[in-house]
Length: 582
Image (cartoon, rainbow, N blue to C red):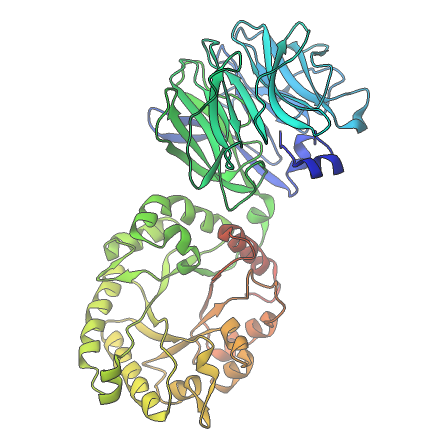
């Protein structure tokens, strides 16, 4: 169940129905991860939201939440969703737990007699269905654990005038509740270890959400994870007591005391004795993916739910590349690329990008990869390389003398690497501002020479503009000079439409003035595409034919939030839905 800040809690509710937490139409994938092989498989796909899978102790069923009701299905996906009769409770949240003997289901829900109160309580009912029996007299209460002997319920509760959020236990038969934690901030997700000696939970007491463990009486509260850039939620202990799996959120996505839907998350594993976390799965999910214990009885597998936004699947397909510089925070070094490329590239492909433009050439390699291997990774991800950015400006001495022979030798090696990668276009990504026509003449000749070398290798050469190319130098600009003093067969241009506007130019005027010269176009905005209103994208796209534009590349130098993947997703959807985009 999503935990809300106190202000938001009081403004709306402490118990929002599970289905209300996915604001967009969503496709759900019930998946199983095999810890032995390190592989995942989709059990079943649903055109609606399902959440929070449990695995029954006998291994026969997975239990999930759909729209506030509980359902079961076979772990191999051979059955449809079979509803479990929860009586008059039809607004279950994602805090449902199966007892160790498989006879009972504990769950959290608002009071069915007072549905508008949105005040969650803990209930228990037979696994096969029946009349729920309320356990906790007070709310909000969110169940997360039942002791192995079936005697105690462990839950997160909001109590007192300040609605302090702590871990409590109380007998399933009813009685007085006992508060186990009293640290500042949210303590949540309490779950018993299989031997009943410990309760695992997550706590924000250190300023970041981390996994903790304590004795079942609340003593010896011990921090078990020390993630530096993630917020760690909902530790789940394997039945053999050896492994703990939890869901981790990037700290730039949300506040430490939040866990919401439609985010890029990880499933991590640590030994039950503690240790460094291992990332098992990266996927698009969050709220509903792993709220409750979903281990198989043999401790070899666990279930989780990943999601796709329906509009991401249904929006019209467009041919559009993405500049990989946009995801430099995730792929910008060889180490980051090796660690993150599989997930990041798959998400870009899911968003609707169909190609890519590299920005990582260095010393014969791309992101630390050999050229052919790098190209294969992008192609296999559904993002074949249509171009690559790199640059080698002239030194001050070369610019003054007009002798750029040493610079051309650098380009020989660069071109060879791009040819080995099969990249069809090589683009000079940046050249510093020049002072006069003498310098512009030298650099234009330099561009011509590079273009001739590229032609000999069967590669097209282009120049990428920023904003300073549109500033006046005497009676011209760098952009006008370069276009006028290079030949179309040797040099094409890739105009960055946002930087052109920032530089005081009209992209459409340039597209019309220099027809046929803009083989590529950088589609960019201040943040996400279309948000600023600064760039007239409709007119730009309608002039592609006149400009000679064969493809366009989306680039985000930054998003409106630190979540660059979210920004790229919104940009992709904006362009896929735009009627003027071919």
